[in-house]
Every structure is written in C-alpha cells, then in structure tokens.
Image (cartoon, rainbow, N blue to C red; front, side, top):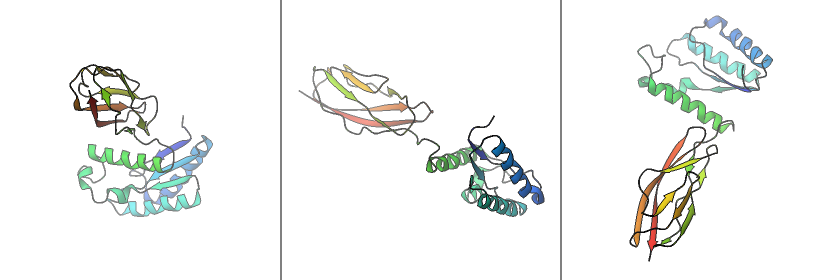
Length: 200
C-alpha cells in the first residue's frame, strides 16, 4: 500500500533506452494507487548512460505536474566519500546525506515537519526558597514533546516531562547553567543550555 506521497530513487539497474517508458509506467501505477505527489531523485552520473536517464527524469516532470525532481546527482557530485568504490552504492555518510536532502525538500514543499528546537532562551529569575514555575517552549517538531535534563538543575528544582520547571531553589544566590533536552514524537531532538538567576 502507498500513501499520497512517494519518493523514488531507482534506475541504476534499468536499461537506458527503456527508462523513459519505465518512468511513465511507474507514474501510471502510482496514479492508479491514489498517489498525489511524486519526488524522483536523479541518478548519480557515474556512468554516461545515467546522464540521458536523468534527462528522462526531468522531461517526465515537465509533463507530469504531480512529479518533482530532487537532484541527487548534483548534490552528491563533489562527495566521492559518500560512496563505495563503484561510485554508486552508499556508505553511511551517503545514506545520511540522501535522507537529509529528501527531508529538506519535503520540508520546503510543506510535507515534512522541521526538526524540533528549543525556543526558550531566557528563564525568569527565581528567588531562594520560594516557589518557582516556568515552562519551556519547543519550536517546530511534532507534538507531543518530552523534556529532560542532561545534568542536575539547581537543588530543589525539577523539570517535568511536559516542560515545566517547578519547585523551590535551595541554593545560594547566583547564576546556574544546565542543559535541557527535548524530543518530539517524530524522533528528532534538540538541546539548549539555559541559565537561571537565583536571587535572595
């Protein structure tokens, strides 16, 4: 079963003179399956035949408004370190680079969600031995979010999974820095170092 959005990265084992027809066959099958949008990666032109096959991809996109080209060939051109000796099969860095390129295009097109970040940059001041309450705010990402500390907060304060800092600071007046971590339900994560000023 296919969803409404499909990303295609195929062709290295296809015959050059049949590739344009293969693209049309695939697009027809996608349409029949209810696919609304298709992103098709160009082939890394390690061999001459892939140059004309990339031209077939571009030509197909011009005739099919539901199809968009992601230019993996140009993006990967200056990175032989992403590939095995044949210049085609991906190493770990190449896999990450391809995934990142696809994800960025899906973000640009409004399909994917941007990775979560920590929007909170300043914490309200606290007073020693007095109740304190502050809520951390995420940006981007996919709810629900989960918060945690990467190191201890000032004694008496606690960070709840929902992003609320609560408690009573039992520490001397001063500035206290600690790192917070937020995770979203899509698996992205972000950290930020925050400083809390504790007053008398």
